[in-house]
Amino acid sequence: MIFGNLKSWDQESKMYPEILQKAIQFLKENDFTNMEAKKYEIDGDRLFATVMDKETAPKEQRAPEAHMAYADIQFMVSGKEVIGFAKKTDGLVVTEDKLQEKDVIKYTNEVPNEIDLKLLPGDFAIFFPEDIHRPLCAFDEPGKVRKVVVKIKVSEIFK
Image (cartoon, rainbow, N blue to C red; front, side):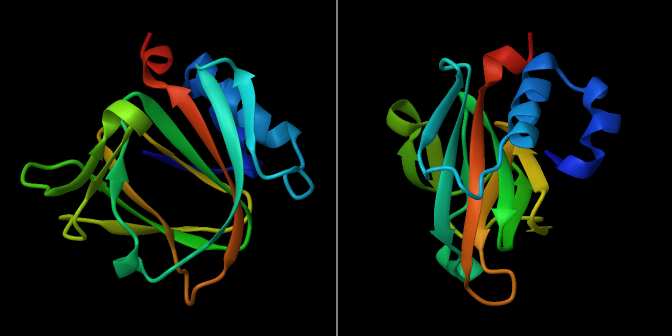
């Protein structure tokens, strides 16, 4: 998992693979406040983004999840959210396995060593296949958020 803010990306970017740099550059170059909420192709199935308007909910109502084929960049445009985060461990209980159809696997609420990441506008978190994340949790109380989720094909990151 990588946690950051667009303001400090220029100093950090050279440490990361080219495809991650390209993904963050897309976030830096676009004004998402006025863009239509939909999917945007950046580089075919290697790299794409979805702009979305969502409502956060209490943490216990949100399911922890992971992805295998794609890494996620969760970027906060407006509003604020908490994303639960933990590394995968043995003993996690799967509640929904849609890896083949949608590249998502969901788990019960019991995730050992889960911490809360608090995202404000400009913040992003990058989640890899070994990272469990629970997005769209309420910060203090439920609220509206506009966010962008960028999907990066894992095979392109670890070349």
